[in-house]
Every structure is written in C-alpha cells, then in structure tokens.
Length: 318
Image (cartoon, rainbow, N blue to C red; front, top):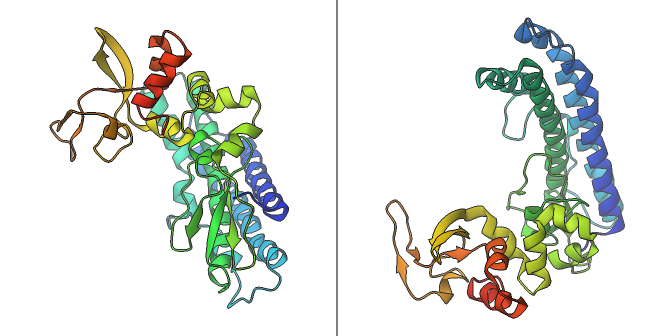
C-alpha cells in the first residue's frame, strides 16, 4: 500500500528530527579527551542526554497532530503523552546508561588494536547511530499509541522511506495488526500509516518501490547480481531473504556461494529438491543440494536462458 502525502510528510519530519539530534550531539563527542576518555565523556553526558530527550519529545509530539489531520472524523479515547516517551529507550532502559555505550564501543576498539583516532571516530559514529535510533523509536512508539486510542483504526501499513534498505523495501505497504510490533533496525526511518474502514492507502508493493529507484540506487541497495535476477523475473522477497542464510558449499567441483534460507521442505527452494538431510544441531531437515545465491547463478550460467532455469530451480522465480 502506498502512503498518503500526509504520511510521507510526517515521515520526513520524523527523519529530520532524528538527523538533527544526531548532528547536535556530534560536537559534544568531540570534547572527549583521549587522555581520560571516560571522565571527559561523563562530564558532557548530561547535555547529550538532554539533547536526545528533547529530540524524542519533539518526535513524540508529532503523533497526535499527524493522526488528527489524517483522520479528522475518527474518534479518540485519549491522547499521546509525549513526556512519557522521552528520556527512555524503547526497551525501558534509561538514557544515561545507554548513552555510555559509544564510550564502551570506542574503548573496545582500542583493546582490539585499532588506533586511538580511529577508535574515537568509531565512537562518534556509534553515538550518531544511537541518537537517530532513539528519536525515531520514540516517534514510532507515539504513533502506535495514537493508533491504539483511535477505535476506528484496525491496522497499519509500513511506510518505507526513500533510500531504505532491501529488508525494509520488501515490507513496503504490508498491513499489520495493532498488536504486531514494528520491525526496525538501527537508523531505520520507516513509519506507519493507519488503516480504517474509510481510510485505506492505495495498494503498492516492493516491486513498485524497486521500479521507482534509479539503477544506481538499485545496485547500491540490492547488489548487481540481485538487480539482474529481479530483472530476469526473480521474486524480490526471495532474493533479499536468501542473504540471511548465506554460506559456502562445494558444488560442481568448487566452492560456491549458497544460502540455507528457504531450503526446508516448506521453503520454495526446498520444494524443488528431492533429497533432504538433518545436520547436527538443526531443528529441521534441509535440502542436500545447496541453494545457489544469484551471484553464483550468474557466474555459472552460460546464457540468460540457463540463468533463468537456475533461478527457477533455486526458488527465486516462483
């Protein structure tokens, strides 16, 4: 399902709030003294906490105005309390403890042999990642509370932001019940749009998002072989999900790139195999023959017809 213009505007505001918070905390990390990293970071930590909490508060305050504008006729049994979502992480941890992690990360990098400068830079990146995620999570939590207190809302659809990762793109437009948690990763900017009896976003799927991307964006997000496979008719979800179980195997007398994803008897690739075995430690039996990755298929294929046969054989064309 495609998002409405209001949902896109809401997402853009939330994304900018998260980015602005990350930019605001950056200069404070620069005050870390290489000679005494812990003491110097603890000295500025209260200001960092205040900035992140302010970003969370701003993101949470967006929920009610967004939903009221989008669903003016929908009744509500309450309002979102933005204060309740600021100053705490989505899993309940307090900000001061959580925002010490960039320091622990930098110190761990030093212990692994990284240079001091590189370790401090790595800590800065971790801090920005954390700030973005905390603000975005607060905004999504507020949105979900706002949906729940509106009886007319029955579900929500995922709004995928421009430049999303491949895992998010294959979830574009999917409809979820209000009891379903919002799947996200660090720096994820995806948001949600409510569904009611009278408000139903226009249907769209991952391939619509894929087609809207430039060739360069497609290659960056999916990889050249995956883009080629999708262009040859492979199912986009199968191509993306295959990367979760990537491994290597011996086939055709050499080591090949393969995946264990979808190779049980229930999986699409598994249904196209005849022999199965249960490896030690596995819960289910998987296909004995490896499921080749798209990259490997194009290395092995003699021509396009051969590639399509292998894509179908390995469960990418459904």
